[in-house]
Image (cartoon, rainbow, N blue to C red; front, side, top):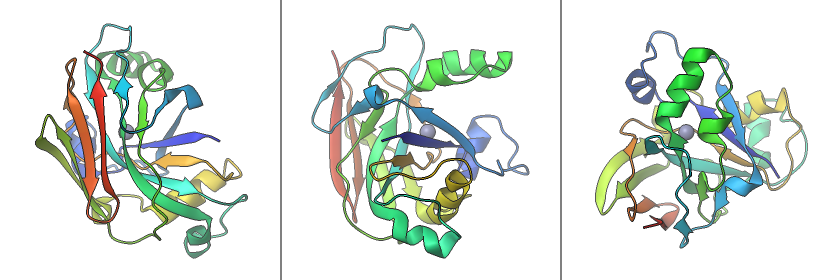
Length: 203
Ligand code: ZN
């Protein structure tokens, strides 16, 4: 089981990260998190030891249900086992330092308890809207129609490098509106199609 993550898959978020909207990431930006990053919903999230702003990124997460490499975008649909919502937690200051130094992002993105992931809902690829709320205030609104690389294309791109495996998860990139968390914050990701998933940052 692998956790793939896609960066800069929303034009407005790419802009807030300082990337030119005229140059969308193509092929998509891909990074990974280890299984130790996963936190199921309903759990308190331990605070990472590294001193840096800890940002929330609300994301649609795709589940993979079969082995192999999609031949094309329509073939990719049969690899999907469902969707859920999650948060890609990011040590933003550290990520900026790593980017500036030309280093990989793992220390800022792949730390323990950095992938909050809901339960998969066995629904097919379809238009999905979702929100991310912190302490009851909606901070991010996502819509699959705004994705630079839609999920079927992401699976084709991943399949060029990795043979997909059942149990793999794909965090598909965050919309605009990312921001810092504080101790004790409540994070809720919600969608009419997928339901509601909640976590609490350790006090
Ligand atoms: Zn992300």
